[in-house]
Image 1 (cartoon, rainbow, N blue to C red):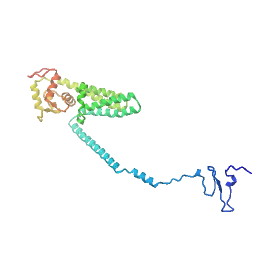
Image 2 (image 1 turned 135 degrees about the vertical axis):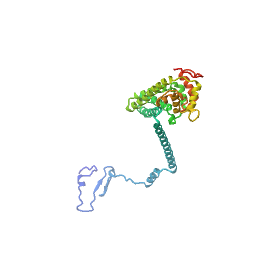
Image 3 (image 1 turned 90 degrees about the vertical axis):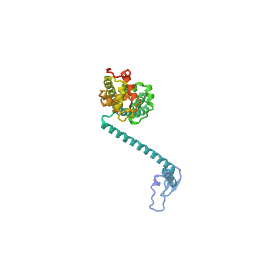
Image 4 (image 1 turned 180 degrees about the vertical axis):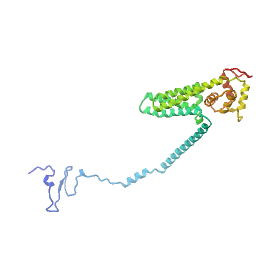
Length: 318
């Protein structure tokens, strides 16, 4: 008499149904201890759960994937808003590109264009560098990027007249940093910003910083050359200077365009290169409206020579 622990004996697994087709196997479930017969019996431990498909839930999921009427309207509004802004940006870029091409056909592009592009590159590179420093918790990197970002925005404000940048902050900027009103001050500032950017030491930073530093150096050199040429001009009387001003005011609007100011200097015997003329115009045009009034010319001439204009013509060399 053998002890049965409920498991199948080897003999029970070798039962043959040769004698009768009605012989059925007896199977004991090891999980529940239940006994069952039948050739197709499968223990619960081996059963695969019946994954019934809930048609209603499928329909609900499909309906949830389709935006409702209000969601669709909101999405369409955002798409229209985005496309409108993209169209405005595209037309703005086309307009400025056409303006630059037309300006380039007349002569070298103004230094202000290159300075603005350099400032924009400083802003762009340091915007991404600032986030990189925040993610990597680099205090020095964050401070360097923040300073360069602010300085790059300042360059764009100073040189953004052609690009329709806001001019409201300029009076506050000039009040707190008076040296930026002068050509030498801007040149020195651009060299400083370019040097900071350069010593961040990545290839892109070195390229951007070097570019802006070169622009600042050109401003310093051309400003110095233009000042030396203007200092050698015979000092006319105030009435003579005003007469020359009116003679070169081609459209008689009471203002000199920059090219008209160049003709005025030629009448006084001063030949300036394109960049030297731009530097001189920047010094004279105090309100940055890209034209020179009679009052601005007289005030600049007197401050440049350090003496008020005489009422009669003289030939004093300064």
